[in-house]
Image (cartoon, rainbow over all chains, first blue to last red; front, top):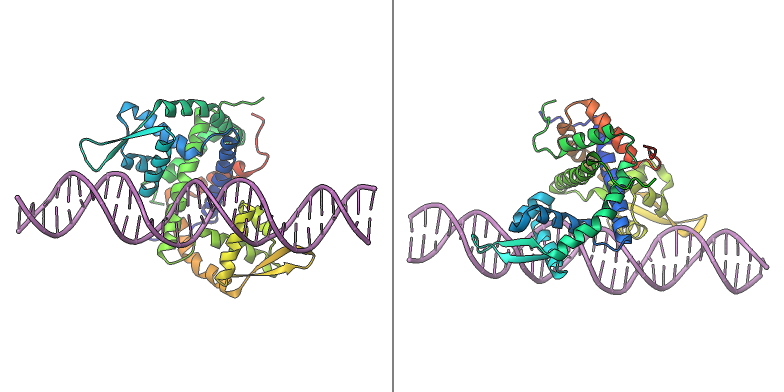
Length: 154
Length: 154
DNA sequence: GCAAAGTAGATGCAATGGCATATATATGCA
DNA sequence: TGCATATATATGCCATTGCATCTACTTTGC
């Protein structure tokens, strides 16, 4: 059953999802930019690489974790490499593959960005949500939207 | 008091906000694209114009409603005009201003897009939220993020 | 009434993203 | 083995966005 007509509440949730994210993301990016830091996408990639420990990640893994298109990963990694934040080496099990790993400069950037980033999250998200329970509720609901097979019954 | 350290729940809410919006927006845009329709931004502008009735809107008003940068409004309106979906005329109270209004082609596009758009919202948002109360709760929480002066006490 | 400052919108340029396609390697199967 | 197909990543081209600046008109202060 298609259920092609969403309720008013669903439409409003959708509209606000787009608007809230847009607004908050812009504000956070602006704070980072003002402090002289690169865009959030760089942070995200570096963080994923740091979590992967020394092993490094394949483009495919970065793509899946960050929901990026393949060609964008390729070019984002280019930029990071050009800035000395990551290194590429060929994946030995697969001659087609690249194994991308974070450099010490990359780790350093992560460390230096975090205080600014953290403060931006607190200001633009934490401060707007009165209580801790609201943050938890929001995280849970958004989790459902991300989840491949949530609800769907109704 | 700066409160520069957000709780884990806030950080998670932030991370999921970005991820959920990204994922859902992509999916909705893909559905529209697959059906041969222009990007959502066009719909948003046209919808704002239709709501403004015959009077039309200034660039400034579009900018504020859609959270767009000024120069982007200028070019987005260019594209819409080129496609015969909107008309510009000088604002008579202010010689610098443009008054943008929707054409009948524009109205027609809105009508034709809605069924596809609506179905996409139902599929990518409605279906993931089990109950109506969840949609309402999500809309309310996201509303707080958009609200200029929400909470802030804590 | 006019110069100075302000505001609305446009535009050149560089960076980024999307789409299609190219290149290199890997795998499957006759 | 060897060719057809699949997979991983790169790249050319065009559209869109961001940033800075430009132009045209308006308002303010004298």
